[in-house]
Image (cartoon, rainbow, N blue to C red; front, side, top):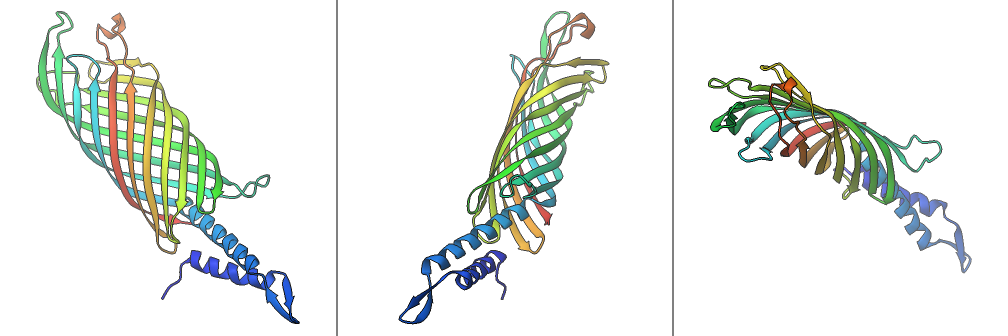
Length: 302
């Protein structure tokens, strides 16, 4: 039979609190204050719950990923793409109280890389730039996507078992759009942009072995660019916003081995650019992208 670390912490705290509290004399015999024992048990529970959160957030991690993707150009007629893509994520995270000037709070850093690739259904049009005439064009996009993100922030325990972690985030994302162009050309395009913004992470230790979390991010897509590798056109795009919401859990299987499950939803725009002589009359319209996915993985916690 095994007893969880959180349970042992509470029992040990209660015992130590009872041993260390001030004695009261009743009819010549010594007794312990019930309030002191209860206060000691609560302090031990808070310490053990905080340790569970810090352990869940201090790790090396890997997960398999399944992501749904939807893209739409904001004009009529406009290109559309949708489908699912498998992938994976790897990363590392650190949350520990190493601040000499604020020992109750935690330093937070994290790094993650996500890769997805798969065939997306492309429902679009072909436009004659000389006449403006369009014709339907349906094919497949053999898409490849990359996303890198780094974080730096501080964790603040709010109540026993609940910690909030505001952080700064910076990163990079890209999409290689490689459509089958057996009937028309110019199907190999790269979209990319730097990411910079803020996030807020919440962790709750709901049981001795289970931490659940919820998170929100607002990022700016900066220095965005689109390159058509077939037409030798590369052009910058305006800035735009990216919103990301996620939920998840971390379950301590045994010792340093943890199981993780996360879901996320994301929205952002590629701002596009107007036609110029340098682009031979080609242009990129404003577009909207939605992504939603699931990560199932494991971590080695420290």
